[in-house]
Each structure stands twice: as C-alpha cells, then as structure tokens.
Length: 229
Ligand code: SAM
Image 1 (spheres, protein in one colour):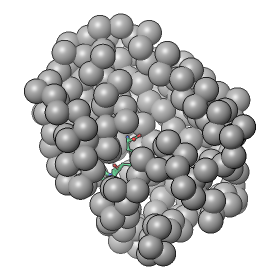
Image 2 (cartoon, rainbow, N blue to C red):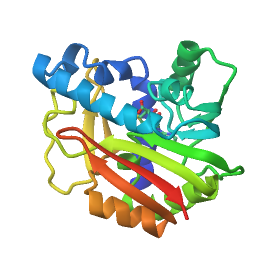
Image 3 (cartoon, rainbow, N blue to C red):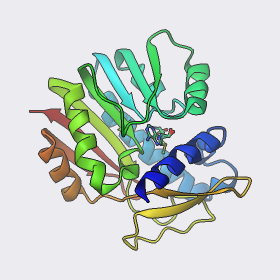
Image 4 (cartoon, rainbow, N blue to C red):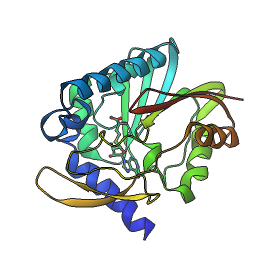
C-alpha cells in the first residue's frame, strides 16, 4: 500500500505544480485572512534569517526542491546548487523562475536515489513530513552520505497547526500518517504527512549522525540546523 501512496504523492505534486505557490504565498483558497497570513510570512522570514546565518558555502544539495521558493534563497548562500525533485513539472517552474547557471537540476525519486557526492550543505523544506516512518532511517542515511564531515544540514517543515493547510482540509493530528489532498479542480490524492515534535526530530537526526538544534516558530514551522559529526 505504501508504494502506491508514494506514487500518488509524486503524481499529486506533478499535478499541483502550477498551483503549488498559491499555498506558500497564501493566494486564493489558501488565503487564511490577513492576520494569519501575516503570521505565516513573519515566521517564514524568521526561518529565512536562520538559513542565511549559515553564511557562504560552495556546494549545496537541495532535496525535493519544488518550484524554487527555497532554491532562490540557497542561491544567496551557495556557489553551486544541485536540486533534485521527482516532478519534471516543478523542476520546469523552478528552472524558469531562477534561470541560473549555478543550479543543476535532476529528476529522481528520492526513495530510489543513491547519493554520489558530498556537499557542504544539504537542505530540504516541507519534505521530511512526506517520508513514511519505515523509510525515514534509510532517507536520513542517504542525507548523511551526502554531507561532507563537518558539513551542515538545514531543514524546514510544518509543525502541527490546524489552519496551515488547504482550507478544504482541517488538519487533525489523529496519528494517521495518510492524508487526502485536493487540487483546485477537485482531483483527490492520498499522501503521507507526519508532524514531528522537536525532541523526536532531534533524536532521529542524532541517530543519523547529526548534532542538530531544533526550533519552532509560534504557529507554523519547525526547522533544524545540524552539523555532521
Ligand atoms: N521543497 C519545496 C518547497 O518547500 O517549496 C517543495 C516542497 S513540496 C511540499 C514536496 C516536494 O516533494 C514536491 O516538489 C514533490 O514533487 C517532491 N516529491 C514528492 N515525492 C517525491 C519523491 N519520491 N522523490 C523526490 N521528490 C518528491
């Protein structure tokens, strides 16, 4: 069953490529009202500041890079970005937005991808929550293999917050890792969505060889900065 859901998850983001930024920028059905939207953007700004504190590095690997919302931030940090995603549609949007010779794009399924290089920084946003628990250790092992010793990881994800998702889906932290998601045209998909608590995330990263500091913003985000030890 999990294989089918992971395939649906890929199909969902492929079909959602042109709508994805509406969620991040709180457009249309993702509009949560001025106050909540302002909170969201303020919290995103806090995380961006934390990311930029890393300072300049040479090589960055971005996993599940999506439409480029974070790739454009990474361009301000790294000399070279390698961006991987399973969806050619989001990669096309990312490429057309950034139009940068410093970004190399690859279409891979991260569950079958094998790392073949080491980077100064490995980054992933809103991705770990889509990795099913039985594949988490294997994924984090690949992250570890992709970071040079002394290199860094930075990740961002959703913390459990009932108003952060599409307004036709009220989140319930019912322990069910599978959630339904609808596109603007009504098409429905089933995906994996897991909300981590800071201690749990820190422990998982520790087991994967990272000394990490986990922070949460007031409402929406959990983020981690770690060093490979
Ligand atoms: N990191 C981007 C951001 O924060 O804007 C995108 C996050 S989006 C929630 C999840 C991304 O994971 C999508 O771009 C989707 O195409 C990608 N994805 C889904 N399943 C994948 C898989 N098996 N391998 C690689 N990427 C996958």
